[in-house]
Amino acid sequence: MTTTTVSLFSADTTFSTKLAAAQSEFSFFYSPLSEDVHLEDLLLLSTDVLLLDDSNYLGLSALDLCRMIRLKNEEVILILLGETFTTEDKMLALHSGADDLFKKPVHLKMLFSRVTAVKRRMAVVATEVAEVRQSLTEFSFNDLFLDSKRHMCLVKNHEVRLTNFEFLTLLYLVKHSEKTVARGDLLAEVWELPPDDPTRPVDHVISRLRQKLTQKNSTSQIQTYWGHGYRLEKL
Image (cartoon, rainbow, N blue to C red; front, side, top):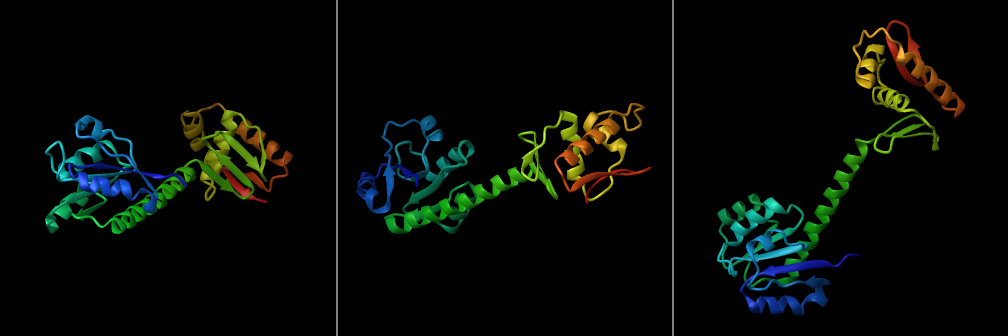
């Protein structure tokens, strides 16, 4: 498991010392920020958790810093520290991208419990985003699997070599397997030709796809519905 890096931007040297001493207990790496840090450096800082204290060397409020940092960095966990926080302060902070606020003196166990909770939530979101992205590039029907990102087609986990137009035609049929696809739709979407184009590239590609699927003993085949188009069906 990767060690969490925690950075503190604060003029409170006592709290900085407290954080440094707690590294082993809470399993994190402390990376303190010096008093000569520039705003530009802070905005682009690479760290997992950034604690922003109202009492800091730039003389800016933790809320203002939070707003500016969040515009540049969506990944860092931002936690604001201050002497007092009103309900309105909390609402503004959360709306500005803060992950939490803590009143000083900070209870370290509570602080790192919150960090753990936020990291867990972020991991779940990252997994969901990855699954959505994957679902946008991977498609399947019966014993067929197509990966549009890698331009790969599998039949029963065995790769089938397809030309570009063969792949795009089969991909379109898989995506629309719930209906009969008109020849004109394939011409427009795959070849980018007018639906009434007199050439017959679709027929030849469909014929080759049928041969290749049969050679792989696929139980998926392209059926012709005269006057309507083509439909991918399970045999």
